[in-house]
Image 1 (cartoon, chains in turn purple, cyan):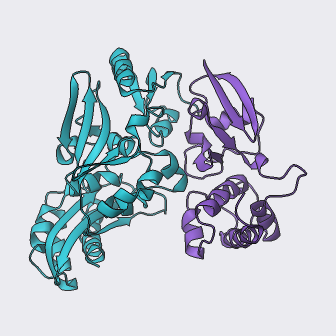
Image 2: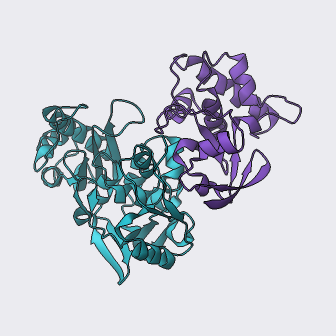
Image 3: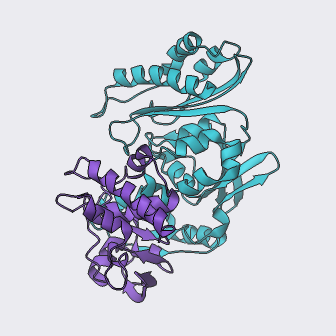
Length: 161
Length: 283
């Protein structure tokens, strides 16, 4: 077993984990952050995307021990303290950027990171920037529209959170 | 999918990592960014007893200049390679190719050294090191050595690294001012290359004065297309001349027949993509 200290959505956790435990398992089974989903489990689909020190990563392909000493943000850490949605969450809601919703947590976390990297992406840059996240329902059109709305909202609000 | 049990150590110096590797023997495996290794472990295609994580060794990260040489630390992530000003100025081919590796999430974790040591013939970055004659810097229990990229890749998923050695950095000459392009054919946007071509050219007054071309996934290792280079140099950087030179792209190749593509189709791709890559590099 290995001792790790990880900050998840603003709370610091100290745990003993098996070295083989994946970050996504740790988040779901130890910390209880079941908002982060396991999709393909082979690093293709992006459903398990979280932010590790602000960088979007596939948490099925990171070990929990590799997150030792680092900060993780999951979909459950995006909303404000009174439950107001993050502009990217609000945009996915407004633009109906989902059908079954399974890809949505990963899609939103990758979109948050994308808008931090590039606050004013073109449509092509959005599609390229989301190519590690698969959606089997929407055909992506409304997802792209949501990211565009979020980019405008964040620009108006004075930058990404 | 859960990997088989293993012990884990995350040393903070290269010396400690080499010591752990010496102690672990052939049951130990180096963990770099984990974007190839962790899927392999999860599929139980490998079950090492000890993982030695290089992620906490600062000296293996980052890009630096040593005189005329640009050295990329083995643990520099793809994301950081793309953003690095030295890479952008001197190694445009490396930057442009790395932008096409996998997807953004994988590029935040995956490393140049990890990708090269994994030596997947469909991986994109081996061709860059072969095209640009990079030197692989290797540390072992008896000191350091340097291996040219062309001799580093020895077979499918096999390199010149001994089991007690660690790839520490990749040293490149400057290619500032060269045009560069990586032309990649794959069936799904984030998938491995079916075939791809790395090209860097120097053009003066419409004439190609120097050319470097290497192929991805046309054999067990990345392959330098020297016949194409020879056909290009001192010729015009014109559509016809480049496409004619590109016909030599399959010389010395040994493409596989697999579920993605038959060998004959890979050969066709190599010729077409070489023409496109060189023309795009020539601007």
